[in-house]
Image (cartoon, one colour):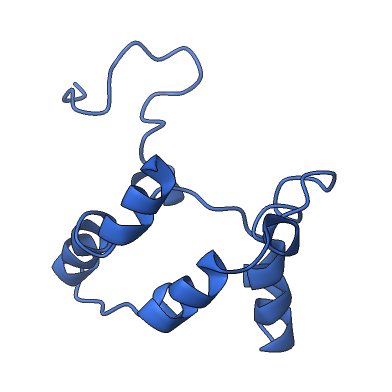
Length: 108
């Protein structure tokens, strides 16, 4: 199953890349919700415990993790929706709404 394959290799693909990006900026990151024990436990839970898409974006997806974040006092973080690291700083929108450049193109 593709989803299981993605879960199995997240630490090699995504987290390795993210760690290199953050290290380049002199930061060290922690991903507590992506620890092996947490991920394995979450994979065993029914989908309705993990998401409820009747709610808006930033609420319904990852609902269980958002609840845990609120319980830990991470109120603002519990409301954010996931963005890929390259979009988190919004650097992908390099020239505005009508841009023709791609992310890999050099701006003049």
